[in-house]
Length: 273
Image 1: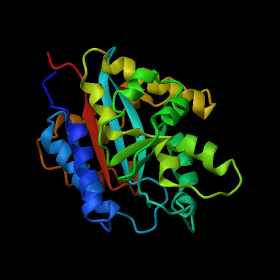
Image 2: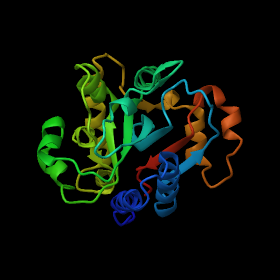
Image 3: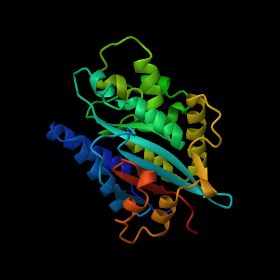
């Protein structure tokens, strides 16, 4: 793989600086800038934006796919992502328990992800720092040294399983939820640079994430979040094969697949040799 110069570290650090200097920046601005900039800096990452339905039904902002080599083609791991800008020094429970007339956002996110065989994920924007010992405790399926890899990194973007948020926030009595509480149950975006680290191959990393999903979901979902062959949606194949072209027509043609997400991001880790 070509060198990508720790782009996720750099992007996450820049987001942190943005949050510190302009505390009122909108999460939509952060998301658009983050995904666009990552796709500009790494040619293996691409991002297609769509228009937004005002009344969200799926609970997600965008869809994220990670592609790896697989038998008879490639494997595609699916994630549904909802972004949240956390509030420092305040109660973030209302932010996580947000809903509309279709229901609680987290319930919509989790149920839609289950139907699409995707991992429901929160992306948090915050200039706060998590507590590494708590992260290690909360991510028992990850080697401690892996979590510690970014202990001293500056992150403004973090990722968390929505299933674990359901379990650790909503399964307990109502309480004040600080930004750090949520960050302790997340990992910095900088950890995504491990996907480009040849010491631990991308298929191994993605398989571990897939096993975690199947354990957390407590369902015998065949394949988990891994899709292959005919199971890969047509719009993803078009994105991977024709990504150098203008694909503005994609949303209209595949609106039944895409519903009300604002875009699709792809991390292509397939061997090009």
